[in-house]
Amino acid sequence: STLVLGPSNKELEQGKATLMCVANKGFPSDWSLSWKTSDSSGSSSIRGEESRTPGVLQNDGLYSWSSTLTLTADQWGKVGSVTCEATQGSQSLVSEILRRDQCPQS
Image 1 (cartoon, helix red, strand yellow):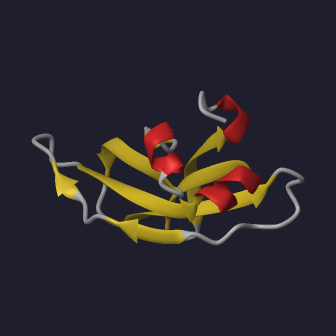
Image 2 (spheres, rainbow, N blue to C red):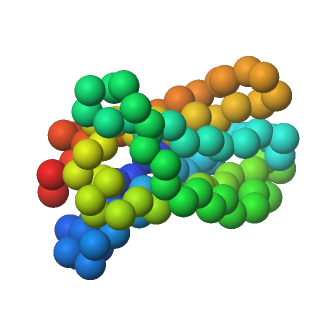
Image 3 (cartoon, one colour):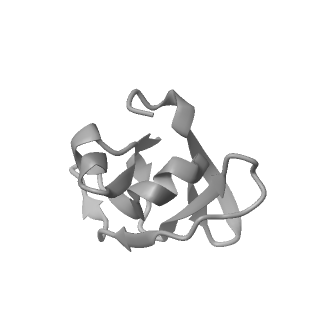
């Protein structure tokens, strides 16, 4: 499963917004996580800084990993929704969408 966590209030006060996508429970190592961010009209994408941690092998022989997307607080203010997609090869298997209006601090 994948989970997207939005930025904290404290962080937004410092002018940045970090989103984290955590993929766990049974992902083999050849999966990758990617981000898609669109503005509230859904028309244009917002480019942030992505960084991904290498997969961590768990006891069950499957991997979990996370990817973070860093935006400025200003960019976050324009975000409509953020999608974290887990893909394997050309297949998109899981996507998790976080809408900014679902975040408590927006």
